[in-house]
Image: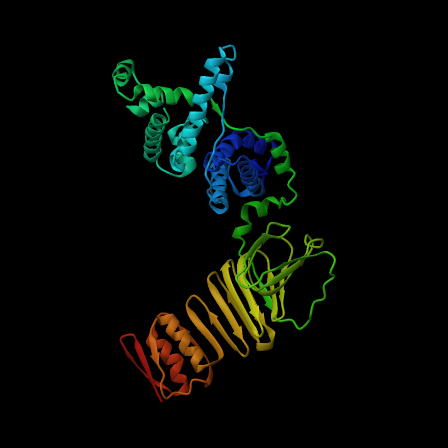
Length: 169
Length: 285
């Protein structure tokens, strides 16, 4: 009998490198806590590694996300979430005049604020889509909800963001 | 339409129409400004190395990897009179107080769940050759295939090859519940040998023994009161026992399918008559 594919270090490493960021982000979107996101990511993949023999290659992704989800249910006391993002788009244009840079910074802060203020369900779906560029289908699978639910949450997130933006202005 | 725009799949005509909406400007702003956001980064390679070098990981042989759970394991429970002496230096010990609960893994990934008011200890160093757990109280085990796995209690020993079961012991009580696989219980002092399959249970309290099999219930030197309790539970009836000495002892078996048959083979053997009315059984001398 051959060794199970997931138990080979090389295969496992590939899986890890492919999904680690998304798992990390997923937890981060929910908690806004970088350290916790790191811990849970590590724990989730650790569990996959320990149980490599009983998980198929196809279900590895789902397994890791499920583990991360469960760990979060167990771990969280939800405090107010404050997410921080770097914005590559704007940091590229450093030669603009100072006034413009300030404006951009302000806008960026507003966006961060607005995202942090989104209800948790909308926030996670919205960011998985915006930042991780996952399709609706992929998000639905990770969160174990329907594609329609993802659509609804994206719609609501855009709507909420719009309202929050109006208030800030 | 919004979703089509959001995912950049609008046709040109549709886009023209969409642009006429009031909220279009806002939406574009939101979308543009969230297009290039980056989350905090972390050292992935460092994490990967930590995971791959995880020392708690053990690699069982291929057969076990794929099939250990399929092996219906035979378990032997022995009542032993020997008391075990443990060297104190290399022992891993877990204690729980009332209402407490601990779940952890043995070095080979076998799992135990220690319930409240219990203590459990084992020798880490010799674990790979001989898996011995000393238990006081109540614990659930899920054992991976490997060398002999022995749970020692003051009331008896449980020997395992790979299954999920629960042992609960205290004072003069031994309770064994089998969840997966099968178990063989040997109580030498009572000359009892019993195979337990999944969801079957053995309870030994002092002299009396109650064995709940899937089809029938076996009772050995129980009081009439214990029998009545079992009957009430099994058939969900109320048994009216006025005028009867409920401390009388007896041994009997009864099938779980039919109440009348069960009463015939149990209560009747004591010379007690019964009558059944709806959900109530009345016993008369």
